[in-house]
Image (cartoon, rainbow, N blue to C red; front, side, top):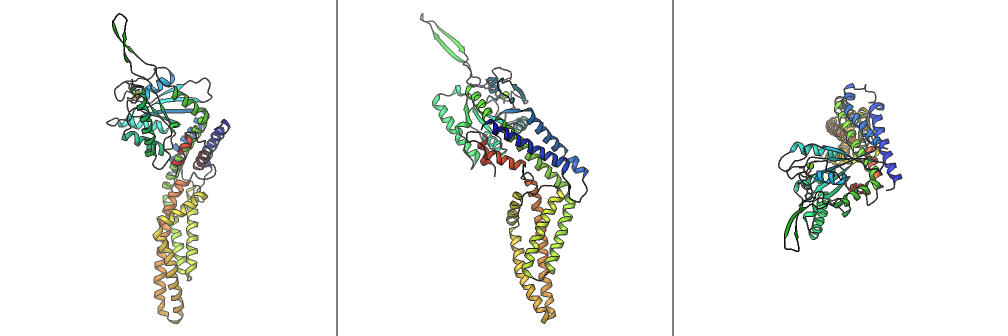
Length: 448
Ligand SMILES: Nc1nc2c(ncn2[C@@H]2O[C@H](COP(=O)(O)OP(=O)(O)OP(=O)(O)O)[C@@H](O)[C@H]2O)c(=O)[nH]1
Ligand SMILES: [Mg+2]
């Protein structure tokens, strides 16, 4: 992607976060309900994080974190990249205990880069350290996923989870000095397959996403045989082979550096807004229940009192739609057209049986009732038929309202960032514009 396009992505992300911040911070109202000071206090941490995400964009700082099992050479890879052994490395598991950040000084680049070393995932112990590593990863723009041996179940799982979180990943196979050339080919193929499985139905890892390095090759014994027959043994430390990774990172920086930052900010923004929606729904629970109950009463009454079967179905649908809108306004959450359509589909599926019963009863009971009404003129005792049918139908309709209220909550929560300039909408837009060679392009199929 050219720099203009990246700049556009960057500005879109900023505008999107800014819009969310303004909306949840100042503009939003809860219809005619009074403001809720507790709710305002409850969402403050999320608003602060939104603000921080914007500030991070302004600093133009790209965060690259290593991630992987213990002793794969995460620290060694960072040392090799910066050409200086600043981080401790060693054969024991868990050498790195806490995340450490190192500024990577690159005189030519406009972006600032932080390399972050994380503690290793440990299959036996070190849960706390694994958690720290996961937090750092979630907070980074790009992950260097370091492996150095056959891929284990834990690595497979971690790769899968990072993919789920829409993290751009570069897989770095370290310690290739331990493998002859032909084994490297096999490793490469195994890694590609791993990507395929970890992605499920999504795109497999491509050769573009895999880099092979030797960050800290081990010393090798050298035998020098002198002409006089004397044999001397010395230890030689081969030079690190890190250029493929360094070149790859530079390529990524120029091709999509700013877009990576934009994407990370948007994914963060999307999560924060869902959290705000969650808290809002929690805090407005009582008002929402009253609202749903009122609509259920209207709907039941309208249906029970109306003698013509077909009108029931229309009246019912109308009430449902009005309820969805009223809930959105009560919560002060945006109801976007994308989500409205999805919401309808979901209501039909999740409340499918109920819906069928409601429609069916609308038709048959309605018919029965119309017939009952006709019979009423001839025989006053038919009122029983009319009444029972109407009550049953009214009850079912009211229950429908209750279900719709429930489903609407979920969808407002998930759909709050799908409006114009919403985080989810902007993520999709950016991903659609990404070049096939970028890491961001690989994230496309991860989004349902
Ligand atoms: N043969 C070989 N050994 C390496 C290479 N890179 C690192 N090592 C060795 O692997 C061991 C682990 O390296 P570290 O960089 O400490 O690994 P880490 O992933 O940071 O480990 P933790 O901090 O414990 O999670 C050290 O003994 C390194 O010398 C390499 O390219 N080749
Ligand atoms: Mg380490």
